[in-house]
Length: 393
Image (cartoon, rainbow, N blue to C red; front, side, top):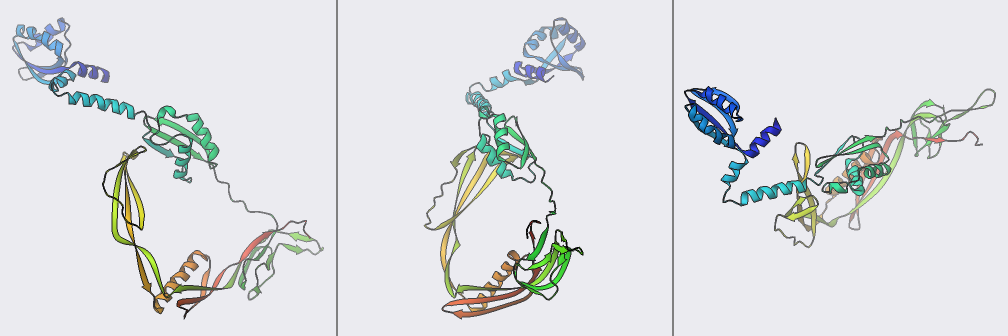
């Protein structure tokens, strides 16, 4: 049905009404002459239908014999379009060039979709695919699917299966990740030793034999929980020691900052320059020029998206920020706040598992600089498993 409608549109057709005394006779005469008429429907005082342009010319004498008056309601198809474009050569030429452009662009990959990369970095997969010969903007005739799949699997150890499917101008990459190995608890005999110096506050031995108790002072490397115990028959028993040994750990640090210093900051002066990116080609769309001696740059890219599909058309904007040098003088209160912030960052990022039991901060001024002395007491688990061989003496 679609093909028939397309052929009728290419040949051109008209919709008409026939009104008169005997419109039914017109249908009979047309059928007898082999005239193809479709979609006939009754209307007030006659009938309506559609037929090709050539058949409409043949049906006119039959209408007079049937005492009917024909009237064209609508004209459809390529011949009428070309007739309207007569004297406007740019329209058909533009249509032909547009069709050729569409055919040309359809030979390239417009979008790359990756499915199944839940834990694996999608950026890493795209970079690996680009190295192996498939990316946005590449000619589809240069794509060797089998080679790409084989080379990508060899480079990405986290993938056990990969499939490249070319659907029009879109490349669908289906990925199946390898199952992660479960964490299996080691059964190798081991001791628990101290990871740092401290004072024991609690010992919870889930396996092994505790060698220390609450209030004991230990240094790094001391035995906390033993994985060896002599039986009543004076034979050694070897176990995998497992324990949580909490201890108070004393930490001391020193920081120094100058009382007066200079720094570089971003000023309000900025210049933006935009470029249109089509596939791998870029075209300037603004006339801004960079002229700052000292500047910082940032980039942002906005990509055209159609039905959740990223198209190879985007606008990339590069912003230049002028840098300015500023000088600041600190007082004691400002220096203390800086040191407090530094200490909080240390506690959050360097000792995230430790609970602060005591904190002390002192600030002094020496030789044009503020010097800060930190002293803290952290309570944390210092147990560190150390495996050993049963053959060792």
